[in-house]
Length: 147
Length: 362
Ligand SMILES: Cc1cc2nc3c(=O)[nH]c(=O)nc-3n(C[C@H](O)[C@H](O)[C@H](O)COP(=O)(O)OP(=O)(O)OC[C@H]3O[C@@H](n4cnc5c(N)ncnc54)[C@H](O)[C@@H]3O)c2cc1C
Ligand code: SF4
Ligand code: SF4
Image 1 (tube, each protein chain N blue to C red):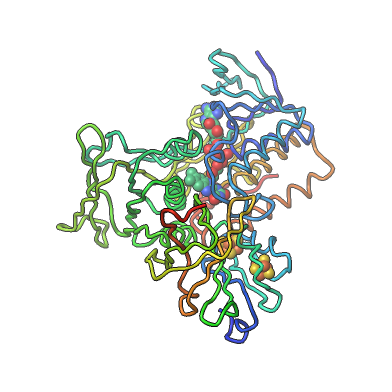
Image 2 (image 1 turned 120 degrees about the horizontal axis):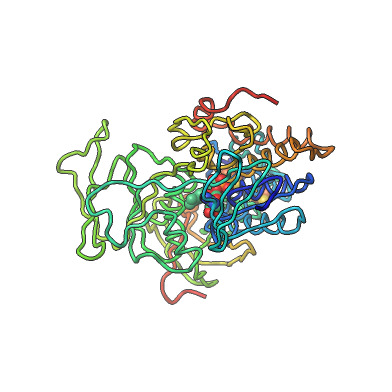
């Protein structure tokens, strides 16, 4: 987990990939060479200084286990980028239910941007209350807010 | 009678890779597939695969299939037959095939069997009600034909197949009522299970199905909790209303042809059941029969592809088609395979393999 100081510098990728499995596409995907998976069964390790939170690795990860968090986004709000492979996609500016790792609704999030990807792992940029940045990992798109 | 140097049975990732590498080395290959399309299990896999770049990791299974199919159709040494079911392998080496409904015989110098695996099922009352499917059928309906299997479904089995197919069901708009797993923990990769959990799908570990209910089709299922000896705990029954039930309780190697050809077989529970004894070059105890992929032990497409490559390269070399780069390519493939199998997720596979892989002979 990155330090307070690192979070204060801007967006960074978080890896919720804690089990040793034979997998490494994230390391090949990062344009800045920030991710290392030494042996294919090792968990990824991040060079926090090289990572700029671009989110490229997120679209390549088969486990959908990489998120980007930016605490510098706003005074009360943080930015959370999540991978999303459902249709319909939410619409930018809409408000959606914010879900935690157990799928419980813990508040709302505003969709800032919908980044579509040719491989269909799309990235949703969410503005969430700062204190929820480490909790929000999915969304529930309510009717009438779809694109 | 048709003759060929190498007959490859099954055009999943293992068979396709075997064909590509044998033909690239200069061998004449006949690749036969019983289905009307190539790709085996891969064509149903809409999720991105694990593994490393060499095995196309990070790409979706169906896209990997397309790549392999394109590669194989670009090589002139490969003849492909679809709708071609291999029926038997005779002692004189003749193979009988039903091709587009017509009976024919083929006489190959060597055979690579890459028939994959078939699904296991489970015994419980009313398990024949319409609405109860194997995970393979659910995937075929949903991902090949675009038909949703039910409105609300319960998944049995939290191995990788169970958690992946449950996620695909969610993507198709089906409500997933939960995943029932007899073991005290999820067997599939945690990252796959986490995808479901963050969409609120409950995972009932130490639970099993007791019976299915319904008159003419499935209406609900009773599940119960299991104790430490995996016995049902009385009074723990719970009714879940669903119109679909999906069984993802494991695969077993599709080995009929190997039995018929008298290859020596051994039971290895870790590999899904009976598998052929073979050496490190994928050769069985039969001089002319080789194996690759799930038929030699249920594993992953990544391993199946590398095994296919090994078998293809090796069999071609035995027939005198040895590329200059043979030793290097062969060794690289072998180290790729051992790297894939080196982690804690592969301990079971390695235990199984230690029972059936004969000492390296060549
Ligand atoms: C839901 C699910 C998710 C998976 N996810 C992953 C993953 O993320 N990563 C990964 O690496 N692997 C994954 N796998 C595993 C992977 O799909 C298999 O390990 C792989 O397809 C095995 O390849 P194969 O070529 O041995 O067999 P198959 O793909 O099963 O191909 C065998 C072929 O042989 C044909 N055949 C059988 N008998 C005959 C006969 N008598 N005559 C002619 N043809 C015959 C069959 O029709 C079939 O096309 C997944 C599997 C499933 C079911
Ligand atoms: S967010 Fe961008 S820079 Fe950071 S690890 Fe991922 S790909 Fe690399
Ligand atoms: S690609 Fe994703 S699942 Fe694979 S090692 Fe990297 S973070 Fe883990």
